[in-house]
Figure 1 (cartoon, helix red, strand yellow):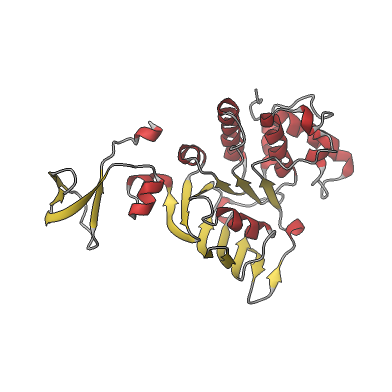
Figure 2 (spheres, rainbow, N blue to C red):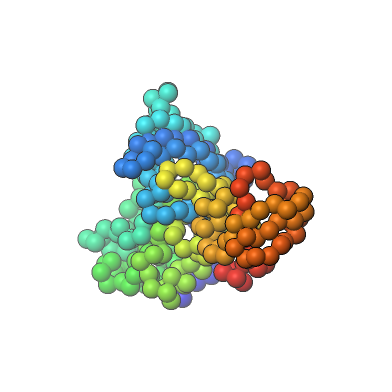
Length: 305
């Protein structure tokens, strides 16, 4: 089991440069042609984890790759904590190695020829060499991997490998953590265990976090805010509670896994007729002018009760 975060361990999670919460900010505006559609997104993230939801091929991973500098947008601007990482008009494109980005992938991406300790220390270029060994030990303890520094990735379970990958991402003192389906390769038990560790770690981490997942309940538990994508466009962006309770479109409502929908017709200012359910319903909020759909749900939503 992972050890609880200690005050000395929490200090390791802070990005290199101390900042107040108001200074922790990512601003993204980018366009890029990808197979099948054109990615066009604009959003802002702070120190509260932002979950990216959408079907496979909706552009989620490409957004992370552009922020990390692994892909180049056709045009746009990416600013992290006031520092311009990319600007197509000013021809700024900071190399990936200089962006202070921590990456965690679905399949761990550990170096198989390096030990656990060497994997974690790989990105510690800015930390004095005399301090790296003690830093590695502290990360091993933080991730519940005490005594495993001399092992190689093939000697670890999937959950242990993912903890090493998370430790390596944090060890560079990143200003932003980009996590692309980090739990999807794990079985149910390990997934739950690593998810709890992630929540604990992200509570102390002071940088920006973007978290991609295809599991709705996972995003809800880990992230404070959600960005819903479809075919390269943002359908919804905001607090998770608002998106789940008041999805702005039918497509966003489907992403929240609500399945009971009916066509609706306005009767008067306070009532609608649910055509497919053959009943009349009283409404509280003003009705939109667009064609109506109504959905049946419970509060709290049964998915997260």
